[in-house]
Every structure is written in C-alpha cells, then in structure tokens.
Image 1: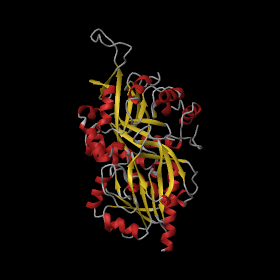
Image 2 (image 1 turned 90 degrees about the horizontal axis):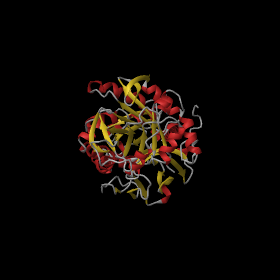
Image 3 (image 1 turned 180 degrees about the vertical axis):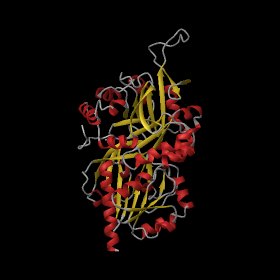
Length: 210
Length: 269
C-alpha cells in the first residue's frame, strides 16, 4: 500500500522539485496541484513558496485555488504551509500590503533589528510546546531559513516554535491539523526529512481516522 | 543564532565538475550530483553550482544536473553562470535551484536584478561579483595603497569593466540582490587566503549576507573571512574536491574560534 496522498500546490512560486522529492522520500504519494480539481482525493495539502505575497495571491486566484484552500482549512483537513505558504495564512502582509488568506489572525511583518537581511541560513528552532511534528528532532535543532518577512500571530496559542535573528520570531505554528513552518524542511537535511516524515505520519493517521 | 555557512562550490562545464586556477587550466573533479550528495552528507550548509561553460546550447545539460542534484541533496542549491533573462532564471528555479546567481548579465543590464527580484523575491537573487584589485600604475596617479580599490571583471574574468566593486555591490543590493557572492579574482585557486579587505569593504556597507570566495587554503582562512572580512558564509572548491580539508575540519576550526556553525554529528572526517 502506498503512503498518504499529499497534494503540493504549484502556483509558480519557485522550487517545487525539492518539496516534492522530500515528501516522496518519506513515503508520501505526491501529486502536484495546479487547480482545484487536483485537490480531489488528496489527504493533505502542502503550500510551499518563496517571495512576495501579492503575486502569490494573484497566481492562486488565477488558478482558482483561494476558496478551495480556505474551505480545506475550514474543514479541519491536514495542511502544511512552508515559508510563504505559512505567511499566506495570515490576514495580510506588510511587504506589499496584500490581503492574504485570513485563516490565522495576525499579519506578516518585516524582521526587525537583524544583523543581516534577508535572514538566510541555518538557525535554531526552539519549541514552545511539544508537538508530534517535531518527534525525534532535538529541541533547538538547526533548520534552513531564507526570508525577510515573518507571520506574527495574534493568538499565542498557535505558536509551536520560535527562532531568533535580531529578535525572536515565530518559526512554526500549529492549530489542530493546520501546520506551518517558516523554515524549509525540504532543504534542512536529515532533520527536515524527519519533520516531513512526521507530517506524513500525522496525515496517514488522520486519513485512517476519517 | 544564525550559523555561519560553509559552502562547497562546484564549477560545472559540460556536465562535469571542474576547477581551474585564476579561472583557467581546468581539471576534471567529478560528477556534480554525486559530489553534491557527498558534501551534503559531510555537513555542507549549502551548495553552489557555477556553470562556467554556460553555452546556451548546453542549457539542457545544466538543468538536468540541477534537477538530479535537487533530488539527491536536501540542502539549498544556488546556481549561476549564463543566466541572462527572467525566463532563464525561472527555468533554473523550476529545475530545483533555490537561488540563482547573476553576474555578467547583471553588469550589462542592472535592471535584470530588479526584474528577477520582483518576480521571484530578493531572497532568490544572488549577485556574484568577481573583483580584481586595482594597482597604482603610471596611468593612474590618483591610486594609492592607502585606499585600495577593486574593479569588477566579467565573463569569467576575461573582461574588465569600469565598475568599482564596492559601488557595484551597493547598487546591486539597492536593485534587489538578496545576497552577494564576492570572489577575489586575484586569489581564486591560489590558496593565498581570502581577500578580507575586499570582503570587509563590502560587508560593512550592505545589510545582505556576503559569501566569501576565492583563495581558501585551510581552515584558518575560513575563520579570517568571517572574523576579519565580515562574511556570513564562506565558499571553497578545490580544497574540498581534492579532500585536502574536510568540511568537518573547517567547521571545527570555526567553532574553536568561537564562530557559530552547524555541526553535523555523523559527518565523515
């Protein structure tokens, strides 16, 4: 039997090969979704992406994916946002004033008081609470980041991990099956693969439960 | 705390990894995806591919190598060499690169930097600057040793420009570069150490990360590039390809000097 079916949303925002390959490596059956039809039959949704919010939202709108993604999250189905895919969950972005998906309260804001910007490289992800997404990974393990903006949730309860560059910022969120990471697990070596394996395991468990 | 990165650079020509001295005398060093996977295992924080042949008709070969590498090495990959348009950058990113470095084409048309940054975000745009130290000569009376300056060279070091390297670095960042890859052409492949004066001159003037390149001989050079040059990341090729020093040994020296590095426990020495 093959692994859980994970749809990776392709809206033209950069490197899809890595996330697709990494999820495949950890046992998921990956499909690349370019429209709402392609989400049918998926057990989980992964929204990757780098860059600015406005062009990303415009491309999601053109692909007819904004409402399907909102409905997916509203139905409490497994979701992982990576980097820009996490930022898009908030109400809006200070980067270009774009209105984003609005499924998490808060805004995407610029990193402040940083020694360097963009924040590029490996940095420590420190958990604020235990979460199965990080099973088997040391607290404070290094993950790869490449960004200048970051989601700032209003509700502290959704914060799963933080990282420091200049000031501490939120590097992972979790609200039930809605998960998001600011770093790139698909580019973070063995710990990144472990995190994606944990996600795939959570998806498999919820697919069985459903 | 953000780690200082150690980045093996793979110069690629016709589908193979090669390395020369001062950009010439190329020697075959291996298969790109294979070397990339080995470096990822040994603790590389990131990889850089530079297509030094960069012939348009061989574009497909490069994209194939990028994709095969992205499927084997789960660490970030920057690809440079011969990217002249937004569409070419898109192709390289879609093949599996995380960042693209622009060099000659950005000098010829600086708006390429802003157009690529607008399309893919500045974090995906690395501007590579090949710099050569200017020396005072009879024709240039004003130049003194007190005020070092560097000129930008392009086309793999074959062509001089009238650009001053520090001014070009600042301009590139204004236009949208998210990172600068600074290579000292005087030091490239010589093992004379990084040009820390050049690195410091640039890193002190820009907020984006600076990757030091050109001249690494041993672990102490990596320490100097960060401590004296202000580099955020350090790149080297031949010392890793020829197994003169391991990534682990370089990182151990950096850690010993008090620099934050990502130590990979299972890294082969």
